[in-house]
Image (tube, rainbow, N blue to C red):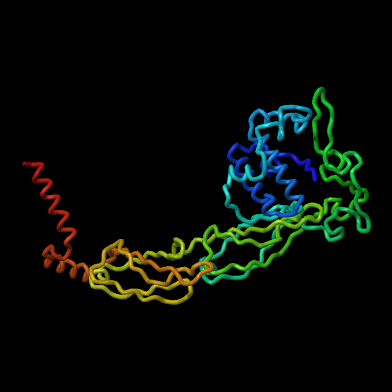
Length: 374
């Protein structure tokens, strides 16, 4: 089997790919089609050889420049010296030893070109992220034409081999001393021509439709969690399999809680009397339960109290995170005359031992001032 495919297409790279991207693509593709992983598969062996040939050219700046300008014709008839003209790998083991050593994993053979993947952004509440839910979304997608089953041909008819390119999808033209290879203008690279196109899709094999898709959101999803719905992306060309739909989750801002992974945070303002004397406060959880939190005597602003196992569930796992309550001691701003009187009485009985941090700070300030004035 001889492969006459664009080198960039073989490596699944853009024509602007840099050296690092090319090398990474080569490693990936060579691993996928290595004959040791596809025993007895002549197509895989031919593709492996073609991938090696493509990389040998594209990794060399001069050869790559020639290929970009003239295609494979630049290396024919003793051109710049492509694969087999020296400087390449002698066999499959040389290639894999150079990049992978003796260790490599499993792979699969490439099939028809599948359709494009799609992205959908979905915003849900924190409560939905906690419990999980099933919801329905609607997306506009290019789906396989039902009338022609994706072939693009009118029902009851088919396609024929392109006469211009002979089914290769590419044509060659003489330009001076060079032969330039281009995509066939008649079949647009397909190698086949539809003489009687499907009326519904106009020969595209795909039609734009609005699809409703049911999505199951598991408990514990977080901002940026990606849910894959297989086969719900764009339909592939000429009846090829559809791509996938990827749903990216976004969690709406909550009026009480903030989230970091499985940990929930909230701020709880308390009165200065509760801070001084201690007490109990009640914090609701996203599951509807209520958590009684004990406030110890003398608690300070910024202190965090933790309720174990009251946070978000672990995505596709067991257990829950924690609920962290940050205490903010609130200074009263609307006091009655009696309350002010009681506070004045309290101030008259203060010894400084009640607020050791305050006393320690002002003692240090006094020492600092004394040192300056000596």
